[in-house]
Amino acid sequence: MTTTKYIFVTGGVSSSLGKGIIAASLAKLLQAQGYRTTIQKLDPYINVDPGTLNPYEHGECYVTDDGAETDLDLGHYERFLNVPTSQANNVTTGRIYQSVIEKERRGEFLGKTVQVIPHITDEIKERVQILGNSGDYDIVITEIGGTVGDIESLPYVEAVRQLKWDLGEHNAIVIHLTLVPFLSAAGELKTKPTQHSVKTLMESGVVADILVCRTEHELPEDLRRKLALFCNVREEAVIQSIDASTIYDVPNLMLKQGLDKVVLKKLDLESAVPDLTQWNQFLQRHKNPKTEVTIGLIGKYVELQDSYKSILEAFIHAGAENEVKVNVEPIHSEYLSEENVDVKLSHLDGVLVAPGFGERGIEGKIDAVKYVRENNIPFFGICLGMQMAVIEYARNVLNLSDANSTEMASDCENPVIDLMEDQKTITDKGGTMRLGAWACDLKPNSIAYNVYKSNAIMERHRHRFEFNNNYREQIEAAGMIATGINPDTKLVEIVEIPEHPYFIGVQYHPEYKSTVANPHPLFVSFVKAALKRKNKSKDATMAQK
Ligand code: GLN
Image 1 (cartoon, helix red, strand yellow):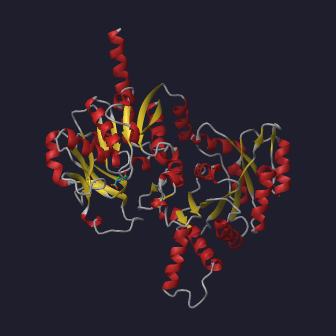
Image 2: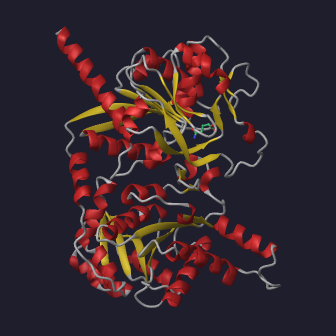
Image 3: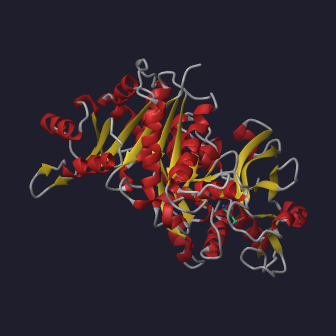
């Protein structure tokens, strides 16, 4: 049996250095040489998972097929590798402690005092090796969230130290990411922060094998030599990570720097030339669009780009597929009203109403849906966005003026969106939604059926509220059709308005499954519809002239 090799990615100075992208890029290069590679993220916070975190804190919550609510870096891993991740790919301090405490309650520690070392560190070590022991991977990359030297990172660094020792030479290596700042006043790149960061790591007994230095300027030879000498790494193991115009450039930048080669050499594995043909074709299309479209993204967390990370990335994949640059215009739903909706939306080629929770900003979303429905602008509603489309239709077409979701108005007379029976008794917030992949049957001749080219699909969910089937007949008779149904529960997963040029709302989150290798068909078709509208209005203006 071949042993699985482990790569740990740690970071100094700042957690926003892009460890996730470096890990995903390295994984891509290893995968493209035939190594079965996966990536795991360890997060040092005490939440059991990021599901209960406000998007303003850590950006979007990513969801896997098996229903894990995870860090958004897992989205990058899937988008780069096109391989699904699972609960095992994201572990938090909260989960580690929860599991150790449960074991203690079951009496598994046989009367011993339960301590950070060895019990917490053993649990971390076990979690790190779950993926490796599955036999599915040749290489496991483990990204340690946070910053080396922080109190909360200590048990992880100690676990890395022990694992490196346990696994032996050539079986586990440490990549350390640091910042090489540029002082413009002095016109100089500074190596001190890197030296200190490596030193901090060494104080915990961990030697960095490779340095990845985040920098705004090229690292000159003499500076690399200096870093190598003072940080005790070979010169070839000093890798620069220069700011890139797109994250999708990073695998090629790392290839140029030889990161994959140094890694494989240190792991005693053979290296080959990675086959990035498909990746580079995507980049080629992404960087050379023939035209552009503007899509309005209506949400309430638009101030923070990371809140809608997967949606933005899905537009990049769909844009490349269509050879179109997709300009996403964030529109804050809280400041949208019947009075200004025309000014804010009339120039758009398409409108996406985003997922979300709670009451804030929903009336603006409903006004937006009404506007695009009446003005034939392509519409794509995701999760809460789909629910808003149903409410708008019930209010303005069926004349059920108080139609709402019981999430927003628990005693409304027409709860067209309502809690499922089995959700009504749940009081805990964490991990209690309808989560993960669920089956959906598609109605022939619908938009969904035509874009998926299949009559049965699986998509990932993260919500509590549902289309209320008591209203289905009435809503369908008025022209909004349920075109995707869960075969087991009969829940409505997709609604469409066939009369409209392009109007679709989905209860699930298609954005989680869009990857470079497999752009999501719903995003691809939505961009196509936006392009069609743009060309049509251009033709109309030409004809007028
Ligand atoms: N708040 C809605 C629900 O819980 C929608 C959730 C979402 O958009 N992810 O059903």
